[in-house]
Image (tube, rainbow, N blue to C red; front, side, top):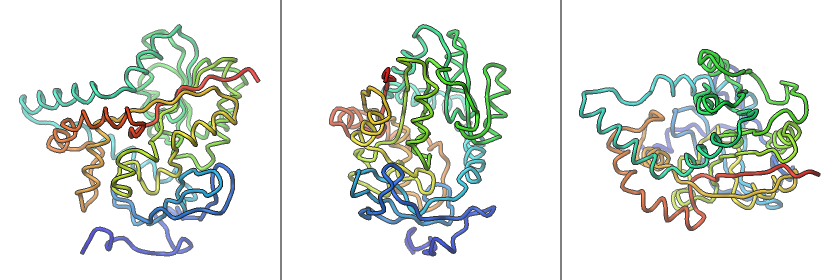
Length: 328
């Protein structure tokens, strides 16, 4: 029996994941059109959730999105977050730990987002908001550099862990529900968060309201036209049902941000950890940890030159976006 045959092929009205979380069909999250081209239908390959859904491409605005989607996605994230916490880096003997550290250095060498992250932290300190902050780990460097840090996340467990770090202000819930005053922040960052949002335009509009004039938005999202999406499709780690509800391309993310009042530049990044997860998704027939083992990470590190080539051809796995708020 193939892995595909193990997933139930239920209708959206009948499907429930857990805790009353049900699916509902949606139109295009950017333009509202209900006219889309089917790309493929697939299931959840990472956590083993009993769900099938389809990635489609809007015929009007060309954005790739998932349908149906979970009515209450926040109910799914607690398990995913806790799974990431309990499936940490592999423990073991001294040589195993040394090899793990060697692989981590190789992964960091090819992760271009780290360069932008260091540049962000090194700028003149101000106020920064991380939307989808998780446990707040990404904000530690900003705090150390003198920034005033704020974080927002849906998951209460993540916010609890963030508060335990002892710095910054961390709030649980939707961004719009926090009622921040306008022009509060110098920088807003969203690190692999916008693809999870059912109404991305509304979030970008709220971020613009919160940014000071010429404020900066740093945005990281999976590339819907990456090399693995083009070649492997449903086996790419960017294809994460039911969590990745919008897959932006360079064209669609530029258009969205331009329409909402930003000047935009887009770069490309292929984290080797993402290639390792794609290899796991391609070969695994059972749920797997979000931290691949040493073997698959070794193979992924060998693909470093391919990752650089993909970035140079605008087919990197991740879009790295810098957007500056226009005055009007």
